[in-house]
Each structure stands twice: as structure tokens, then as C-alpha cells.
Length: 252
Image (cartoon, rainbow, N blue to C red; front, side):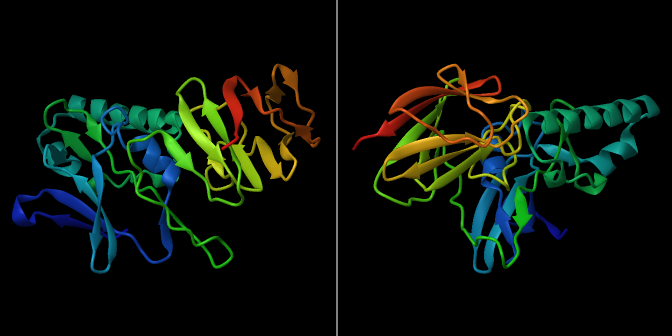
């Protein structure tokens, strides 16, 4: 991994230049954008450069772990190892992919105020020629994900627990927790299957099909049989495992 320390102009940054074969994982970006401290992560921003795009990690209030270890006693070293293990477990439990966390000790940092570990999350994935070359927008502060438009009408899919609102406006929208396999990624709930269900749109309206999920799909309390398409009313409550959503067709 090609990380560069940037101390120019009074800045304290670690930079990573996004390669031509890499794309931002928009699901992870949305997850960590306002939660760096809670997730033990360094604050990250995106710089547009002449050569492309850089991920910039703010280390102004942190000390490099290797430097910190030079001054630590054996007990502090043992405690820090436990903190690192706990931070990695908590990140995984929150839904951040393990392969997107940098675990090289030279790229780990210690918060100077709290003594907590601060890690770099590299929310990227590589794509091949057979994959879609989409360019995701930088996440904003609105809890809304717009899927690619494919038609004249759409539906709102609201996650009741978090009030996130997703727009379904394509012919097929696969839903689950594995970001690279679905169109709509539901993060932070391990009970939801990797590819849990699919909502399809036709000229007649919308239908839902369970993809053999472990904890089932329900429409208004009625279980949807795996592999069987079930028409969706204009407004209904959909449950994936133990997570509830409100589905409503947009008439405008």
C-alpha cells in the first residue's frame, strides 16, 4: 500500500492515492463518515488532485503507534494489544469489512488525548473489466441513497430503526448485507443475509422475492416463500430477519 506522510503547509496527514483500478466503497463511506471516533478510526477526507483522488487521514492529534511503543512499559504494551483487538472486533461487528482496515503497525496511531487506538479504514475495492465502472459520489450528510434510475416511477424503502430512506427505481434491486453483491446494502445487522431478497419493478408495479435467506422475509407479517415472487401493495411493511422497513410506491 502506497501511503505518504504529508506535513506540508502545517498539515499532518497520511495520504493514499486512489488507483485507476480502485473505486470507493460507498457503503463503508456512509457508515464511517460521522462516526470515526466511535469506530476507532482516523478522520478521513477526500482531496481532488491533478492525478485523481487522494484519501487524506488527519493525524494532527495522534502519535504513531511505533513511536508510542518506544516510551511504553510492558503492561502498557499488553493493554494496547488488547485495545487493538477489541477495536478490530467492534469494527467488524459494526459492518466495516475487515479487509478495508489497515493493520500494519506503522500505519496505526494513538490518540494523544485519550490513549485510544486510531486506525485507517481504506474504503476501496478493485474492479475488473467485467464489473460496472460506476463512479460513486462522495457521501453527504443526508441519510439517503439514490440507486441508478431506470424508468419513470419508483418506491421509497425506509429503514424504520434508523430512518434511512432508500429509493428503488430500477428493474431489479437486490438487498442484503454484502455490499459488493447487492444494490442496497443494509449495514449493522448480522441477522440479514448477504443477499437477502430482491425487489423487482415492472409496468404493473413491484414484487419481492426471498433469495433463500436464513431468517426469512415478511410482507405485512406474512412470510414470503423463497424463490416465489409476491406482488407488493402500494404501501406495506417489509421485514428482513428482525429488521423492519416501510415500502411505499411514489406516485408522482
